[in-house]
Image (cartoon, rainbow, N blue to C red):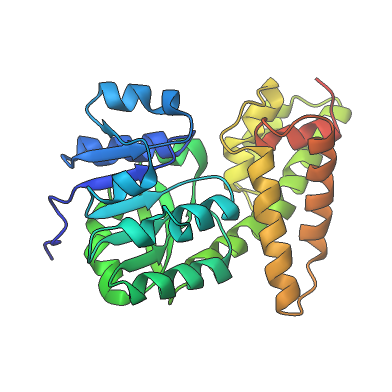
Length: 294
């Protein structure tokens, strides 16, 4: 099916570690792209490559058929969408608004309702895959919203990801991302403990990794972050501060549903300790330092 948005002008808000690669894929596909980020310098290279800089989300929204947001925290999402100078107020009639931030399911529902009241189409579409997935356009994209809206923007989502699933109505994408983060949280503890055990036992961790990553213990974190742990590379593909934010959302959502999450609770407490030690700007693999100092 040919999308009516094949030639759409696309706005991208948030050009951080992942957002920059995602915006670049859209540009390379031939779309005119407008960009905004709070720190203008972070978008300099995209502008040099042909993106159009806008100095407010409102001005960006006025120029675009589709606006994608990839920002830090739910409060940022709320301000960008629902604030006085936000997207809901200033977007073109009939525009598609896609929030790819990991944010609150309840906020996603509020945005959807506010957008619908203004004749706009809002979807929540958080992603998984980290900096590597963003760079290689292999993200997993979890979508919440109306079927027709999903089908309309699918050609654009395919420029950034390979596993794209409509999970349900508004908020379903964010709930699915919480499932993803809950699975990662406990798995990260297991990956760190396994490699720390290998180190303590006098084994070669790289050799151990060769044996266990292709077996029943295999996971994305083990294969992609395990080597970084062993090498002492703790630079971010995904920031500790953002993972803590995600776990807080998941804990709050679980609490609202009356669900106990002991694994998630433990992981959040360990990452909170790392934050207190000053590791907010490091990648999530820095959890390894809880067991092995490098």
